Image (tube, rainbow, N blue to C red; front, top):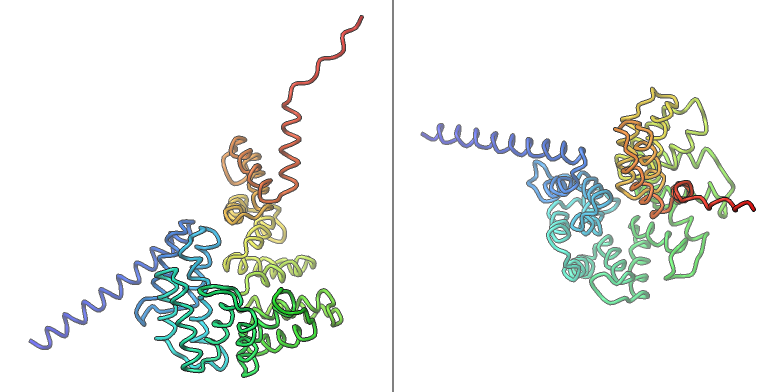
Amino acid sequence: MIKKILATFSILTLITAASADDDIKSLKEKCDGGDYSQCTKLADIYATGDESVLDFAAADKYYEKACTFGRDQKACSALVFNKGAVSRIKSYRVPKDVQRAAKIYNYAVKSTNYDTLYELFKQYCEDDKDLRACAYYGEMKVSGIGTRVTVNRGIKLIKESCAEGDVYACSNLGYRYFAADEIDTDEFKAFKLLNYACSNGEFGSCRFVAAFYENEIGVKYNQDKVQYLYSKACDNADAISCHKLGTIYMGDKNKIGKAVEAFSTGCEYGSIRSCTSLGQIYLEGKGVPADDKKAFNLFKEACDGNDSTGCYNLALCYEKGKGVKRSRNVAATIYSKACDVGSTAACEHIAKTENAQSPQAPAPEKK
C-alpha cells in the first residue's frame, strides 16, 4: 500500500513538473511572438515559483521585455527593485539568500506598495547591516520612492555601503558623481568608483568606464579598452553595451558577423536600437543573406518600443512591400508615429507627401 502511495505521489510530481515545463514553454512561445502580457506571466513564474523554476535572471529578462515593449505597468514596477533580488543570489560580498530574494521580488511583483519595500530595505539595512539593502535604502531616500526625499541621508547611506565594499553602491555613487544632480560632479571620483565596480562584478558599470575612454574624459582614448569593456558588459546582459559593441564592429567589414551577434544579443536583452541596427543589416544583406521578413519583424519590434529609426524603416517596409504586404495607408500611419517619436526623415517625408498632394495654384490668366 505504501509503495502504491509513493508511486502515485511520484507520478503526480512528474505530471506537475511536466505541466510547469509546458506552461513555461507555451508562455515563452507567446512572449517571443509579441504577446508581452505573457512575458509578464512568464517572469512571475521565474520570480515567485518553487525552487525548481526559481530563476531571478530569467525573471529580470522577461520583466524587462514586458516593460520595454509591452508597456506593462506591473512588469515595470517589478523592474524597479529587480536588482535587489538578483543581488541576493549573485553579487559581490552578498551572501546567497534565496528566501530573502523571493521576498523582495514578491513585494515588487504583487504590488506597487513602495512604502512596504522601503520598510523592507530599511529593516535589512538597520537590523541586519546588509550593505546592498543599505544601498537601496539610500537610493529610495535620494529618489523619494516610498518615502520623502532626503538626499543627504540617502547619499550618506550609499557612500557608507560603498566604503564597506558593496559594488552596486560604488557603481551608483560613481554614476552620481558623473551625471546626477544630487552631488557635485567629480569625473575623477566617478571613473575610480565605476572602474572598481566594473572590475568586481557590477558589469553595467563597464559601459560607463568605456565611455570615459571613448570620449577622453580624464583618460586617453583607447580603442582596445573601449571594445573590451563594451564586450564585457554585453556578455553580462547590458543591452546598451551590446549595441555600442555592434556599432564598433560595423566599422570593420571583416567583423560584420560579430556585429550581427552583438546586435542580436542586445535586441534580445531589450535594446530597441540593436533591433533596428540588426534589421538594417538583414534588409541590406550586409555580410548576411538579405531577409526582408526578418528585417520587417525586427523593425516592428523596435517601433513597438518607440525607436524612431525603427518606425521609419517599418513604414518604408509597408510602403515598398518589403517583408509584408504593401499598404500605403499603414505606411502613412507609421510615418506619423515615427515623426512623433523623433524621426526627422519621417517628418520630412510627411511634409513632402502633403505638398505633392496639395492642389496647385492656378496659372495667372493671360490678357
